[in-house]
Length: 318
Ligand code: NAD
Ligand code: UDP
Ligand code: UDP
Image (tube, rainbow, N blue to C red; front, top):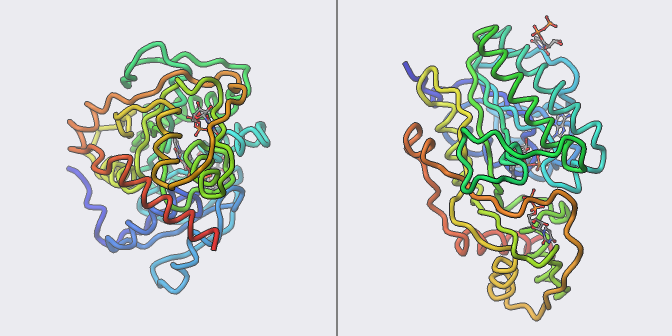
């Protein structure tokens, strides 16, 4: 029997002061849930949740999930983890710790209180994929000792822990493999491609293309992703995933740069910078499983989502 997650449940969102987490919380509150946001504000910001402080169904707790957490809730979304390469490479040991120790603590919590738990995993588990587009059955092509490994292997180990807690302790798990997501509340200095290009275009600075710009990504607008996460949490009993959530429309990084320049109306020029090591050359989700199990597919085209994102970054400049 599938659960009804819209009946004043108490929901824990770790990483709730971050980009994706804050949008997820908005949607959960709008649906009538009570929300406990747990975040250590490493990459998140109070500003992302400032509009919620007068909401009696919202509570914020500053806490690092590498340490045990004893609370009583009905469902857990585990999003706490720095997500942009410059953030997760800033303190790579901490990145592995939050991925692994954070997962153990949240799974221990889920086991004790018998609550379902959703893991924000990532397309990075596929590494630099040799299969294109990526299906959930693909095991990936990941460097275990490179500069991205703290994140990629941390998230892979977290998936292992989720499935072992499920098999060993009957914890109800839902694992989402999230592909590149963008939208308002991205950190303007997080170094990710959408925030970088939009900020550079707005400031009239050069647009920094790493490598020749022929590498591809598929960009999902945050509202679509949040819809997928909520559907996955509410999916049928026994459906664990992993389930890809992302927009299957693929762009080269050069195409993205040209689109941003056009939409901002900027005079910025494209400049090439060295490609960081282990940078995946292509990425595009196969979302057949999400379509079948969740009746989900993204609705917001890149142009429409970029317009809202550009508007947001403009407000930061004023
Ligand atoms: P984000 O950096 O904006 O949010 C992460 C949040 O986790 C921040 O608020 C941060 O302060 C918090 N956090 C970090 N370490 C913590 C700790 N030890 N204890 C408590 N809180 C901690 O990133 P995001 O883009 O919102 O990503 C959210 C989740 O989704 C992450 O787990 C990320 O790996 C995953 N994901 C995101 C994308 C994407 O494109 N945005 C893609 C794949 C996966
Ligand atoms: N844990 C937690 N909150 C809880 C229950 C457990 O943070 O409500 C932590 C606990 O501190 C432990 C981890 O989750 O380190 C794993 O718990 P589990 O019960 O699986 O393992 P054990 O306690 O037996 O090591
Ligand atoms: N990228 C780029 N210029 C930038 C930032 C990123 O060309 O200023 C490239 C980066 O090398 C990668 C792609 O854009 O190929 C996506 O990078 P991002 O950091 O957003 O995400 P990820 O590599 O984790 O998919």
